[in-house]
Each structure stands twice: as C-alpha cells, then as structure tokens.
Image (tube, rainbow, N blue to C red; front, side):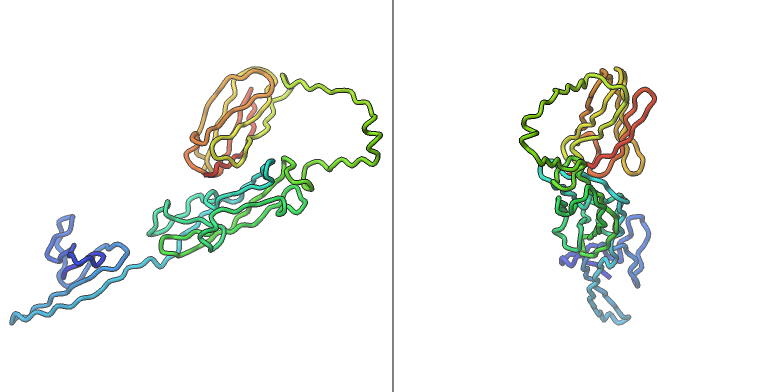
Length: 283
C-alpha cells in the first residue's frame, strides 16, 4: 500500500518503508498516526500469476469532540467614571480550556455561540439604578473545526465611582430653597494628605486595565512596602519592595509586568500587615 497525505498527488508513506523508529510496516494493514484531513490510500494486490489489482480509498479524519472549557469562577469589575461602561473580553474568563486537536491559542472564546461576540459591554442601563449587580455569563469555546462547548460563571459589575446618576454610593443632594443655600456662609475645610494614622489600601485604578494600572495606598510612616502579584493558580508572577515616605502613595504596574491577560490577586505589605486586592488585565 501507499499513502498520499492530504491527497496532494504525492505518496508520503509506503508499506515497504520502515517506520522512523526502524520497525517494519505491515503490508496487509495500516497502523499509522495520521493528521486530521483527507488522505488517499492506494492498495496494490498481486497474485501468483503476476496479475495486479489496484484499489484506491479516501480516508477522512475529523475532530468530532468539542473543546473542554475551564472558566474562572467569577470576576468583579467597575464601570468607567468617564463613560459609565465597561467592556470585557470573554477570553479573560479562561483558566485552562483545552481541545484534543486545536492549539490553545487557536481556540475562540465568546459570550454566545456567535463567533463575533468576543467582547461584551455593560452600561449604567444594565445596573438599573443599583450600585452593583451580579450577572450570570456563558463562556463559549470554539475549536478550529467549529465544535463548541460552554461553561457558566458570573460577573459582578459595580459603580463605585458614581458613573451612573442613580446608582452612586451617595444619594443626590436635593435643595428645596436654593436662595438660602446661596446666602449661607461656609467655613473652608482643609485636608492634609501628607500623613495618615493607618496603613490603607485604596486598590488600583483603572481596573480592568490594558497598558498600566496604579495601586494607591496610605502609609502612617515611611518604610519599605512589599508588593506580590499572583495568577489564579496561586503562582507568584511579580514581587518587589520599595521605600516610600509617609502619606498618600502610589505604585505603578505596567501591563508588560504581567505575563498575560486575566485575573490577578495582589498583596501589599507594610510593617507586618498585608492588605489584599484584585486586578484584571485585558488586551
């Protein structure tokens, strides 16, 4: 027999050829690992009188199995204070999806069976006047042969920056007598941010982020601050220590400091105290 891989007109494997490991092939049956696709098999049969019969067969190998989705169990995000929206790619929910025959980088992640639905945007209208709502989301995974599978997870969308007029953390101020407010006397209030009495973490902004994000925090005194960042599997991907003065401080994280897009947990340490936070890098 002779085997023409992908039916190109050229024979790539002959039964008379030894295998790569040096073992002999069987002339009466095929025991080969073949790639997906259409291959042409030619049998040549001879009898004792020299008569030859040639038969051809097409062998079609296809992937009939769907991919295996593995999704992160929930993400929390915040609406942009500028636009009142947040756009999330479906791929950020992936924490190890795989397929038998499609490479990981070739898998397509979407929020529905529609292959163009790779990103989804949530707005103030979705919050419907609430400060936060948790949405159940479907993450669909599609391999290169069009087979699909999905998993269910959730996304908590918050409005912590008062981007939406009816869902902010503080109720609006309503003044019945505007002229009384105009004639009122106010004592100016001065804030001194140069020092604070406690170690406080104000989390990072923006979040989600693409190119960079800034972690803001307060220190009661000058000293060394330690920052560690971990991926969803618990592996440490970033660790640094820096010296800061007392007061309000910030730590810039570049997107290139993290190995890939996705969800990360960080821990900020000072004076024996550790404060946790979460960040989401998107592409």
